[in-house]
Structure formats: C-alpha cells, structure tokens
Length: 101
View 1 (tube, helix red, strand yellow):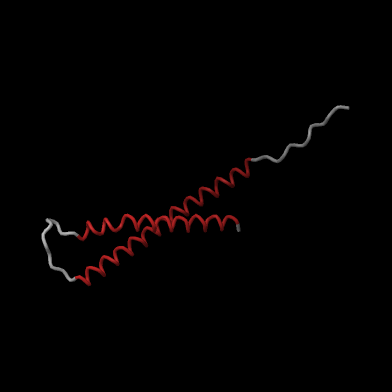
View 2 (tube, one colour; view 1 turned 90 degrees about the horizontal axis):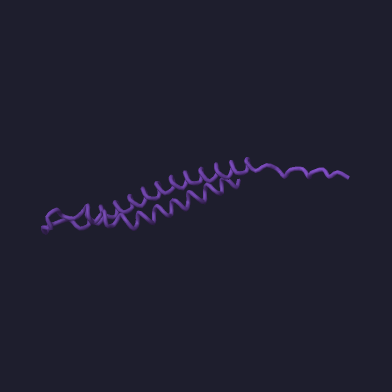
C-alpha cells in the first residue's frame, strides 16, 4: 500500500507541475500562433477567436497535465526500484561474536 501511495503522490505532483508549467508557457505560444504575420490590421470574428484561444489554452493545460503525470510515474518507478534495491542490499545484523572465556 505504501508503494501505491508513493506512486499516487508522484503522479499527482507531476500533474500539478505540468499544468502549472503549461499555464505559464501556453499563453505566449498561443499569442504568437494567433498573431498576424506582417502586423497588418485584420478583421475577425471575435467570439470565434475567443473560443479558439480558450480551447487552445485548455488543450495545452491538458497536455501539460498528461506529460507531467507521465514524468511523475517514471520518477515514482525509479524511486520504488531504488528503494527496493536498497532494502535488499542491507544485510541483517550480524550475530554477536563469540567471546573466549
């Protein structure tokens, strides 16, 4: 059960971190992607643009969350494997040495 808890914590932390990073980086990319090429003034349907930009931001956040969860899962696997190998390497306490009387 402790391993499952460790996996869940790493996956959720990765998801939150991925969403946070996507929320910081996606708006500048979306702005760059939706700007006009030669800085000319264009006519547009504003409600359609707002829907498109919002959909792009939510999609970016979802992708960031998925990538973060995947990275968190990989890190959790590495931590679990390392903890298991450390527990196998530790020998038990040696028996006390016999004293000559």
